[in-house]
Amino acid sequence: MATEASAQLLTPLNTDERRALLRLARDSIRAAFRDEAPPLPCLLTPQLQAPGAAFVSLHLRAELRGCVGTLRADHALYVSVAERARAAAFEDPRFAPLTVAELAEVEIEISRLSRLQPAGPTEVVPGIHGVAVTAGERRGVFLPQVAPRYGWDAETLLAEVCLKASLPPDAWQWAETRLEIFEAEVFGETAA
Image (cartoon, rainbow, N blue to C red; front, top):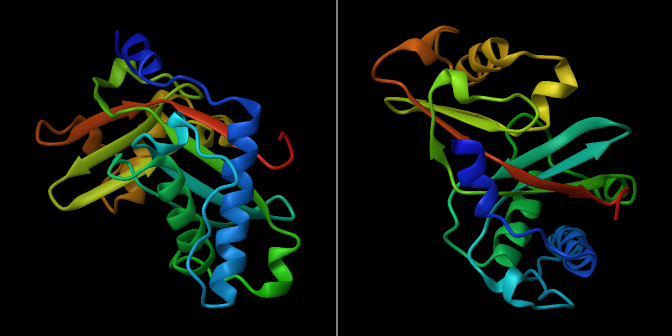
């Protein structure tokens, strides 16, 4: 089953590694305000140096303020986090760039992703799986924590991710649509 396969691919980070990534994300945004390169993390373990896919979400007063990520593990996890933190702060097209004043109030959440696994609609478990739907050049992605936030069942999750990709809500049923699932290790500053 896809759930078992994806869970085996992600060894959880320890508390110190999580803290190091959260601090790196904040320090990377802070450095961007000064036109400086992202700093190195204070801790560089094999887990942080291994290739890793991640999303960084910024929340301001419990509202989303930016979220950017990658589904591909092309770079070391710490590099992915540093780059995605900056992108979430300054490049998410849904939001104006973060201000220095907001940085003090923003809460950072990191979602470290397992590999994408091809899946059928009946394999999608809301709250456990993130989903990626691809049809032609269009792709929509939701992290695992999105469905429970809105109380979505699997069919609603699939319809919503299609809409996010600017596809009809039933596009997940098309033969040419690729459906993939993944799991995530999610942690944030409030829990760290």
